[in-house]
Image 1 (cartoon, rainbow, N blue to C red):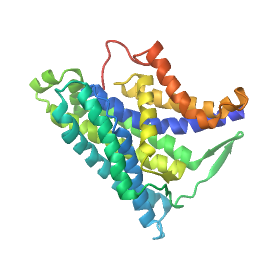
Image 2: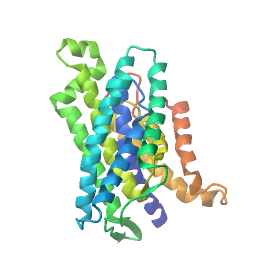
Image 3: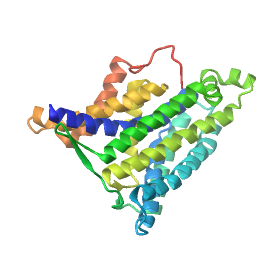
Image 4: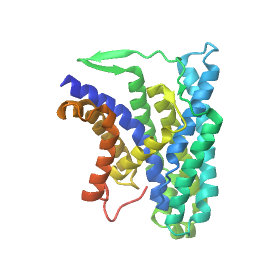
Length: 307
């Protein structure tokens, strides 16, 4: 039982990160019905920018949380600007193009961002500086760290804030109107171009936070780190019902738990044939199962409210 609870805590921590990234996918899809496969690379850029800033400040004797916050303070605007440029340059000219064109563009953009990051930061792994003092707490035999509590708590606050923004503000109403019918929204005075750009910017800000979380959790960053993370977050968005904010959150948490439990138990169940090295396999088995048995996702329906 203790082992199960330990894996559950690990899975919820990882799932919180997946949920933040999945929100970026689902917000863009909810408005444009476009899969932004370059979103994982935005996470990567956020992580590497933060690592660079944290590394530069780590020798100044500042408190660890302050250094981490300064890293995020720089990474978030960089990612937001990157998201804005991606929408304006890569996707806006293709809004009326066949669906395949923006998909190919997204894949090409993802590869391009990876190679640009490799030129800037190199191809070696960048270690997370030892600026944080991480405490561990034993709760009934379950070990939970202060970093895990911070990740889960911050992710919960961000997700709650995003729901409030979308559901309770005039900006959120404009986003929902654009998602439902852009032409009618324009007739009602909504600047749909600004709303779409804002959606990319907000999703990129969430990606920056997720990137810092990943770098801090795994204590390392690399120019390829966004690829697999992006695919898993996309899987989470599909699992919950892509186009739904709550679905992305639920899908991220569930995928993290499934992955953690698979990593913890499959080695024992299969006599060592499948272990933690195969945990990525189970994420994509979940994607295949959802697409086969429930293509609209757990919270999806044929007549759904997008974003």
